[in-house]
Amino acid sequence: MLSTIGRFSLLTLPLVVGVSLLASCGSNAEDTTSASESKTLFFSAIPDDNKTELASRYQLLADYLTEKLEVPVSYNASSSYTASVEAFKAGDIQLAWFGGGSGVQARNAVEGAHAIAQGKVDPKYKSYFIANVNSGLTPSDSFPMEMEGKTFAFGSPGSTSGRIMPEYFLKLNTGKGPEEFFGHPNKFSGSHDLTAEWVQDGTVQCGAMNYKTYDRLVASGKIDPAKCIKIWTTPDYPDYNWTAHPDLDKRFGAGFTARLQKVLVDITDPKILKALDRPEGLITATSADFDTVATKMRELGLLR
Image (cartoon, rainbow, N blue to C red; front, side, top):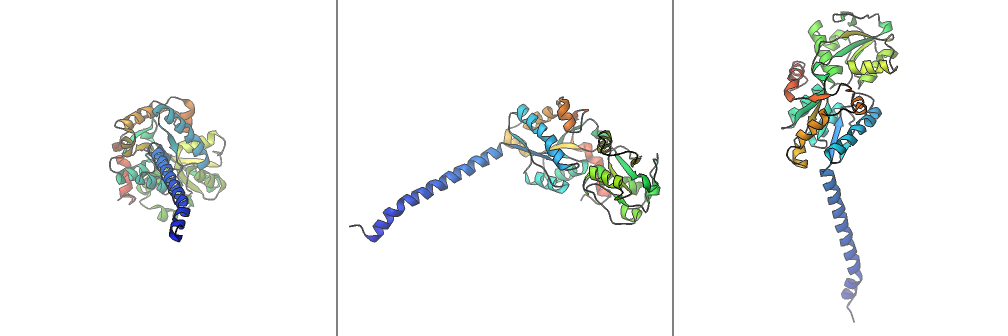
């Protein structure tokens, strides 16, 4: 007869084997998922406009890149400018559509990262200062000093065209910081489209935003230029760019980043270019193109 210990061992043997097989299967599944993710190109973009619309627009690019590069490409939405930079630093995304300032921050934090493309309009970008019709402010060729003491909103705290460069030009022209000039703590709407909405509905009397978003909102009828008035246009400065993570060539092989750059600048499909808000097309870029922005950020204490 079997001892109690022997009977217990025989009874539990199938259970032990089953558990081992399940553990092995689970490990293989995890390994397969990990391998799949390592061969996927994840990209994101700063959430400078309506986030739902951005997801729809960038899916067109994801599909295009998947076809042209012959690797899976997936768009990961970001909740904020800071989140976009942090995801890039962590390697969770390997390609990002940054503003001039967020691109500088990301590349400073990740050795080997570099700008590879930008819109044809991006080397000479600009911001609009806008005002509610009831503010008493009117269009001007010179900086609108009459904004002093008014309620004012920037876009995102990290936005080049919605905060960094407007603040720089404000200080250059007034000799004062925004809190001193406007007489209240900085207000941030979080995105260009919301800045326009805040100004139009009177939440604030004036604000600053990028010119392309304002022009697009007016063209689509979402903003009435008679109620939300463009009162001043900044001088030109470099802004948006596609920045590549150094992990790209490690994941997909030497020369992949150069292939990606070519695929981006070769986009001619009007639907994709419209989705990117760059109907004029894309051109190559280098990190040095944004040295001016880095200098201004340091002057404002926004970059160490």
